[in-house]
Image 1 (cartoon, one colour):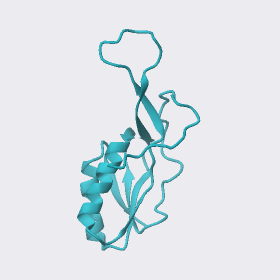
Image 2 (cartoon, one colour):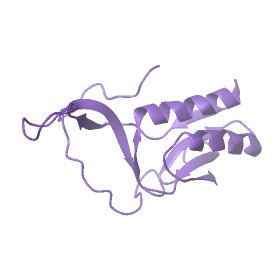
Image 3 (cartoon, one colour):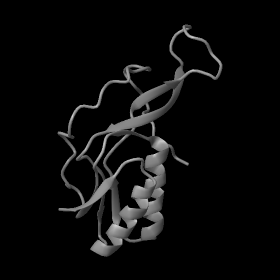
Length: 136
């Protein structure tokens, strides 16, 4: 399983931050004909992106071209179980993409609309947010 993670980051540990408003970028279908658009705010993990990508590719078999428009580059740290307060921040456990409403997650081209709809429906089952099918 080729899990998505950055090769190199400027800072090893990040602040959690706040998700503010709608997506200002990546909110238009620009590569393919069909897209899967986010309707909520959540952290999407690299594993969830990979599971959704696999679900789409399994449904399409050989046809069509898929673009993954998000990349998990935000590190999430975890402290071990039964560890008290203090002692600094935990180690980096996994990477996430903080998604906002309106962001295009996947794009698809070279298939009929009904097939694209079905593929994206299967992918949305793997994601922790509500999604919407969009056309160019």
